[in-house]
Image 1 (cartoon, rainbow over the protein chains, first blue to last red):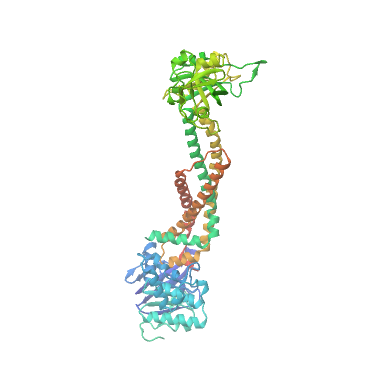
Image 2: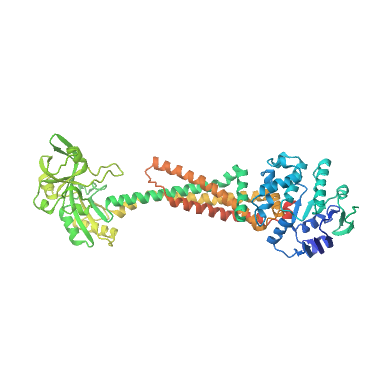
Length: 231
Length: 404
């Protein structure tokens, strides 16, 4: 599903150059549930942004679904984000002026063809995360846990193969965090690849595989090739 | 269609903050309002000028003695100069390119009677070609003829107002009326010309042969005006100048010191008339240009602020699959949409202002369909020009930075 070969990322120009990632080789198979851990500034977010096609590597190759994406232009990369990837953020990033349903179907605007049954699709996505009764509410009227579930429904609307989550429980209380993690688990059981950045070992324990990044390099990769097992 | 969906994204953002949208649109509102008024005034002036020219005669020159500076005294003696029938003859013989020259002698407010009915009316003593040169035919009966003039005939043609006041709806042709102390036989009725803009009833007149008027009725040697019709293709203003020079020469007048004749041409009337509305229009054009500029700059700066404010939204949209181009289109549509709001409000403002002008001033105003088109083009243009910069900034935001 995902293959990174010698991925490096640096900022600035040689004398003051800072290296966020150096020579990352990483392969993630379809249907895996991977937690990416590491101290802040380790480069784990940069890695997620590159995997999410929001950022480009300075060096190396990135193959997503048998397609080399490191060389694609902005429009093509945007289509990849729209059709193959689903994002979930720590701050939810819902648009406050739109109601829940409109937030959920927002990605469809950027799809190659706008479906005629967008509302039904949105309702189905809301139902799959258990908050179909909130479709007309504004994001501001919802609890954090509910907002994150709306954001997950939005990530699911285009049927992505890969879900990318950046500290999805970071702004939630324990109970809500638990519920959100259960949803991710279910999504993974349904066959979706889930990649989640977290600094919380308890959250990481949900995943079958944990990749630890330190100083821009992979420090450890537990559970690799051991799909069934967990830690 | 993707473009329409993206455009709509931009427009929904406008509705979510109506006060800000209105503020951004304000410059366009004033600009379009001023533009609409300008075009309405221009259309009104155009219409009024056409009406005036039609009434005065499209290629006509009118010479009247004095006018304004008439009673000015020179060297202690009254220097009033009188037009003579010979002046008309001189114009006819010495000036090129004339289709007709006709002299008339007029008296205002003469009392006329028919039986017990009476009326006050202008009396114009005219030559036979008066009907042709003034483009003023009879509606019934017959016009003044050369024979009438040659024979000092006591015949008259009635304007519709005295005709109505003396005879009501009855046919006056063949009846007799008393003008002053002289009996005239009615031979016809003039076509109706209605009331002028300044309230003067042009149909309140009776016309009689020039010779009859000068010798039998008014007992005077001078005439009141000479009207000239210029052949198509000859320069109207140039001809008017030549006529003025000829008259000055005949009456030994130094034009650098005094003017004893006023020579009106259609052009001079139109110029005088257009002068007023052009002054107003020029002021409004300045206002219009200024408000578009200020409005555009306000639009641009508030939109730049709003791009900064909505970084997270832009980053999110990029993550969800929006390309740079999609973001650019969305923000550009927002800029154009704001100006669309300004356009509609501006039209409204313009209509209201035009109504006030029409109601409370003498400046002519007429609705103009072109103003809708021109206004639309201007507002979209301003939206495009000043919306590009913010839209480009939004499109070029790094999504990773924007989401942070």
